[in-house]
Length: 610
Ligand code: F6R
Image (cartoon, rainbow, N blue to C red; front, side):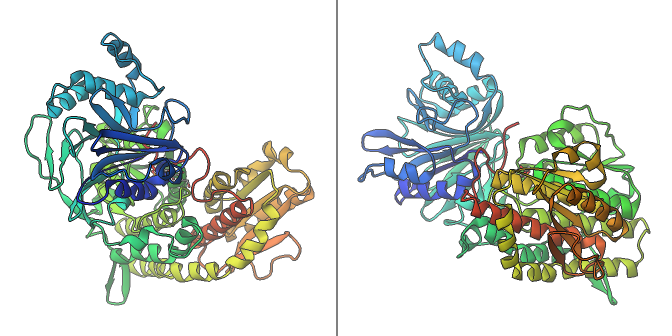
C-alpha cells in the first residue's frame, strides 16, 4: 500500500524515481509525486492518477541526482493533488507508507508552533513534527519523532540544508535498499531496485538509513552502527516485466507451471525409488507437526483461500483439527491458541499488516509459527519461527494468481510430510502423492493451451451483474478464490457458496440467465453437486460446470450450458487445475469489460494498513 523510493547518486534522479514508481505502481495508483534536490533547493511535483500523469507534470530541464518518489493508495484524505506525497513542512520533505494513528493529537499540538497542515493527510503531520524537532541534527530529530509517532510507517526524508542526502526509517511498513554503481537506492519493494542490483538488504525496524551518493549507513536509534544481512534474488528484470503479454496478470497466470515447479523441486528427496517431501533446507523439523495438537491457518484474501484448501487437505489426510481464520478477525478475537498450537500464516508480500499482527499475537501466546511467504526477507518471513518460501517470483498484478498456486503447493508438501511423520502415509503412499504433485505443472500447461476456449466462453459472462460459484469440499474452498478473483477485476458481484447451502437462502437470487460456475471435481460428492446444478438450472441459471477428466466420462449430457474438464488427476489435486480456469475466466471477462486488469479500482497490492 503506497510505493516509495529514494535515490541519490550519479545519474538522473528523476528518471530513477519515475521508473521505480512505475514498478511500484501496483502498491497504489491514486496519485504520484516526486521531490528532488535542484539548484533551486527542493522542488516537488505531484499529480493525481498514475505515474504517467506525473511524468507530464515535471518540466523539461529539471536536473537532479537525488530525490524521493511516492505512489499513493489513499487512506487519510481524498485523491487530490494536495494530498499527494511528498509533503513539506519548513526544512523537511518526506514520503510515507503506512498510517500515523495519533496524527490528530500531534496536529493539535503542532498548531501552537504555527504549523498548519495544508492537506488532510496523516503524513503531512509527520513532516510538521520532524520540522519542529529539527535543529540541524537529522538523527536527533528522527529519534525524537519515533518516540512520538504511533502507527506504521516507512519514511524517506530530505532536509533542505543537507543536499543530496536521504534519511529513512521504518516501523511495520517495508523498506529495502541497495548500493549500486549508479548510487544508493531504497524502496518499498525489491522490484524497484532490480535494475541496479540483485543484492539488497531489508532496513531493520527502528534503524535509520542515511543514503549518500557513495554509501548507505545504517545505525540504531542510539547511534550504533548496524550491519544488515544481505539478501539476493535470483530473478532479473524480465521477471518483473510483461514480456510480450498484454497484462501482468496474464503473464503471471502463464508462469504457474514454472512457479509450482520451483516451489516443489527443492523440497523433494529421491531415495531408492521413493519420492519424498524433504524440508531440511527450510529447517522445518517434523516435531513441528508432531507436536501440533491443533493448527490455525491465518491470512487475508487469496492467501487465506489457499489456507482453506490446506485445511481440507490436512484434516482429511492427518485427522488433526485445523481452523482457518481471517487475520483481521483473529488478531482481535482473543484466539484460543497456546504452546500446543501450530499457527501457519500465509502471505505473498510478507507485509500484510493484519497477517503480521496475527503472527505476532500467535507468538505472544506461545504458539509455534510457520510462515508461507513469497517475498524474501519480508517482515512475516523474518518474524515467524519457521518459514517456507514460495518461489513464485515477483507478482505485480494486484490479483494474485501464481502466488496462490505456489501457496497451494506448499500446503500439499506440508500435508504429505505431516502424513509421513505421523505414519498416516508410508513411503509408497507419499511417493504416489508426490508424483501427482510433480505432474501438476504439465497439467497446468495443458489448460493454458486451451485459453482460447475460455476467452470465448468469457464473452457470455461479460454482461453479468451477479455470478455465483458453488462447490463442495475442496471445490468450495476453490470457489472462494474463484469468486474473489472475478469480483476484484471484473466488478461483477459474485459470491461463493457451499453448494448444499444455496437453498437455505441464496437460491432466491438465481433468476433467468444468472451465471453459476459449478465446481464438480470431487468424485465423492459429485452426484450431490449435480443435484445442486439441476436446482439452479431449474431456476434458469446459466451453468458453467468444471469437472475432473478422471471422473466424468459418462456424465449425463445437457446438464450444463458450458462444460470445462480439467486433465485427469487425483481429486485432491483438482484445485491447482480448476484454479487456472477460474483465473482465466476472471481475466478475459475483465478484458472484455474494458477494465484495468492489473490495477483494479480502489485496490492495491501489499496491504500494509489495517
Ligand atoms: C486477491 C489478493 C489479495 C491478497 C491479500 C493478502 O487477488 O491478491 O486478496 O491475497 O491482500 O496479501 P498477501 O498475500 O500479500 O498477504
